[in-house]
Length: 105
Image (cartoon, rainbow, N blue to C red):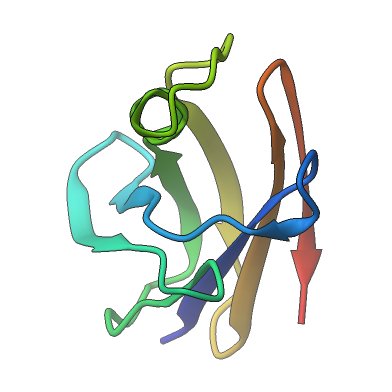
């Protein structure tokens, strides 16, 4: 079994994105665990994941709206492959009209 975590950064302000809702789910979209990013923009999920495809869904539109900031993407969904026995860290660099992601450590 494997584990997963995420880190969301506000690329415009150069700060962690605290308070972003995140759902870890299966490839078919069935929720496994829900969380909110902490003050450092991080979530470490407790769920153990089997090998295969999984998904992170970030409530980016609600997060920007709560700050009275416009945004283009109401939700960012990232599919990623899990290799058995490894930790998978998925980072999200976020701005109102674009985003990028990468596998961190």
